[in-house]
Length: 336
Image (cartoon, rainbow, N blue to C red; front, side, top):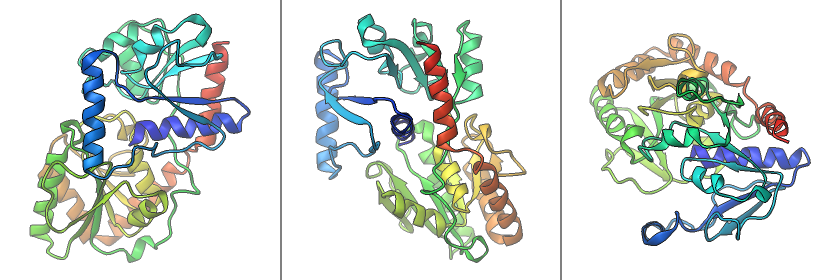
């Protein structure tokens, strides 16, 4: 999941730069019976699917604490407290001043999580975001943004191991059950591609077992570790990115760093770092047939695929976590 991974990447980077960092993870999604019921339902679902209850990501040098709720009682005093999503913004807003200067790290508009998400932009929190398009939306609502901290990759985690030139007709994609992530688009595209290219092979990875019925020829991988995910990217020729909206997605960036050609739906986020016709092939939002055709064109034209893959790999190599975290640190220091 991109959002938590970004949080942990910056937590580790800030700790490396000499700061004391605590990541507070609430075990309950808000107060009241509804929050408790939702939390219990999620835990039961994960137990049924064999999903671990421990945090998936780690941050060397930073501390993760599981708290019942985000409140004055359960959070330590700090210099700065940073909300990391729409659910956490009201909690941080209501904390006492002793908990630190208050900031809000926006990774998406997040109205797909809460239709009232844009209301949180007007909270008295210093706003930092990951993408130009989110900054523009916030400013259009009359609010200011302290700065933009772009997402990045770790070149020691994602890199080319298998030659781009020798890859077979294999595609890879992220599966997520939410409609905004385009699971219907993915399934439609994969079925059309298999009909046109019988030798097609496919991998999909996900945080939890799919709620949709994926085609039989798709190999599903649940929460692959970093080395396994890199292997999956490296054996793939094309990444299918189907999201209808993204803040600034990590998956196309990671796949590009591993030598995949990127075929993406035209969401705002992927266009923050890749350009249609130069470093990716882009199709309309929700266009399964268009996505399938673009991917087939690249699989059938190796020279074109290789050109796109090399261009994308070169472009994303410019985005490093060390640079992004240094910029985040400079913005946070302004609050002090």
